[in-house]
Length: 72
Image 1 (cartoon, rainbow, N blue to C red):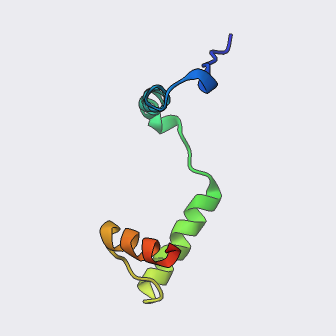
Image 2 (cartoon, rainbow, N blue to C red):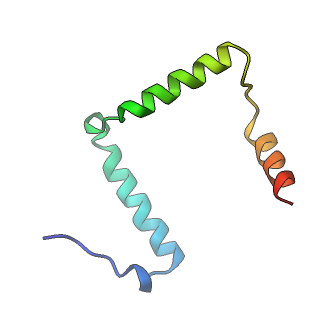
């Protein structure tokens, strides 16, 4: 029998707690989770772009700042 949550009636905190409980439960069986093939392909493409110098890394704070500047 499926479990259902009254999502429309839940507070934001209750929704976040439910999400955290789901994530924790899913992580217990992470060896059963398989990444889709397309994910490996994208990671390989990105690694190749980094190796070729076509991409660069930046820290998260700098990335957030740059994104905010683009959107303002």
